[in-house]
Amino acid sequence: MLNTIVKNWLEKSNNLRYRDKKKVAITASIKKANLYGDISVEDHVKLHGGITIHAKSSVVIGAYSSLNGPNVDIIAEVNHVTIGRFCSIARNVSIQEFNHDFEKPSTYYFNKNIFNKKNVKDIVSNGPIDIGHDVWIGTHSVVLSGTTIGNGAVIAANSVVRGEVPAYAIYGGSPAKFIKWRFEEAIIEKLKEIEWWNWSIEKIKANESFFLNKLTTESFDKIVNI
Image (tube, rainbow, N blue to C red):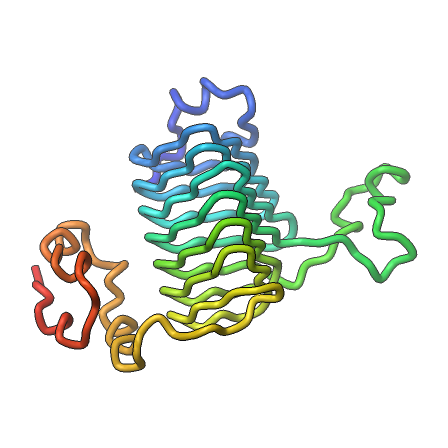
């Protein structure tokens, strides 16, 4: 359950703004993170070692996801950014939902810096960023606006991602392209069916063998239901 106050944590930081918009679970672990704006952080999320989130639009981080700095940035200026459960985001990753507008005479922020208007008129966005559950994003990667990354996908280090990444695909490069599937088709379909990220933590713990051993089609027959 999200705690919308988290009073002690908020009061200790001079860098936190829009405190009434934050929803941070009591069980979340926040260390060396600067959070600004409309942010929801669910249970047991870890934001460690140098995280900055600027959220004029909403940013939601799902339960048990880990973002490990330094230099992890999430910026949502126009559209939302969502990160699912059990995701792993490495150091020096940038998730940027907007960009400069290069169709005008200059990419410089004239509205903000010269004409004293809102900088939203200086930027463009291709849409929200939606990152599914169990996604791993490797170090030094950039995720651009209008991107959807499916459940279980892997983004290789030093990648620039834009567009749609299918569930359980491995993508890499600049721009990121399909490399291979994580598993054979039968296993992928089974994973889509069971949606283990929605299990209770008790059921996950009861299926230790499933999570700690190499996945095969036979693994699904041994799942313990509680």
